[in-house]
Image 1 (cartoon, helix red, strand yellow):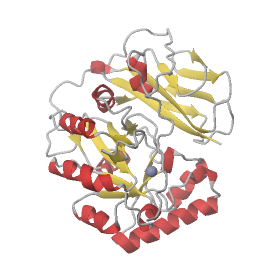
Image 2 (cartoon, rainbow, N blue to C red):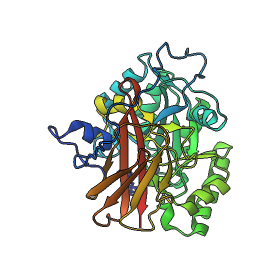
Image 3 (cartoon, rainbow, N blue to C red):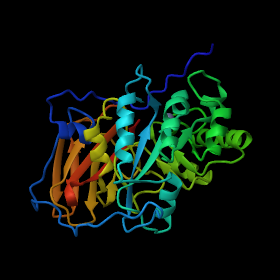
Image 4 (cartoon, helix red, strand yellow):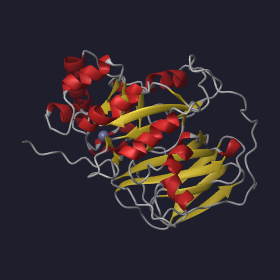
Length: 372
Ligand SMILES: [Zn+2]
């Protein structure tokens, strides 16, 4: 028996203890997150209410410009709480997604709508699963299929080629493709791509593309960065390899304002998979921003000088970094700047910024930086 690769997607998981500020906990999924509310323009961002019935199920079009994409890894594998969702949590998610409020769409359709200016239904949802764990085949897909919920799996080809018993086989993947599952690329070795040379990144992408072609008969055109880690060079290589869109692992709603090569997703695992956080995420809206610094998703300067410009009139904004004692400044109405008192640890540094939007829905902007 071959040994398992130990792939920890969410090693920055922090358990949310009961009794701590649960909203902060839910926003960031971290008990130590620090809220920074600025006192400019108090109150709630006023917007025309998007009242009225959501678009009918037959037509996945509408007037909204955003969607929420969830990311799972393992299902009912309780030995891996940072990447697993427990059975009862998963069942509750499916009940919520099928209660008539949401339109669960295929991720390719959501991307098509983003890229081609097509409207989306309000409360549009996409479902993604990273890595080809066997529990996706045994647990997730039977449930999603039963409820007609489309799913996209991001596969690192070597995880399947190695033949580990906890991973799916190419036969299983072929069966799922036949059933309508979308396959996305996820490199060959599930590598920390920003730490590789450009040539090595290209080799990862080329090898996995060849294996997809050989085993499935096609090469996927959407991608997810392993661990959500990207850099300018990695993104350029992914684009050059033919991928038309790619996901990170930062929280937030995807929108026409998003970087199509670094789209946000909400991670679901045992710590962050309870219904209060799930519904908060499912109902979230984008917080439209521009001129984000640092612009490169791999930090070149530490501590990071994080900032962004709000593109719309926005009330209070609160930001929650995964690490560091932050000082937040709001320059005029539009610019938000955050400084940290000390460098952050190598690995991944996340920051989530939220503002109350219409109808009790949180506007959300999250970033994940790879820290060398
Ligand atoms: Zn992965």
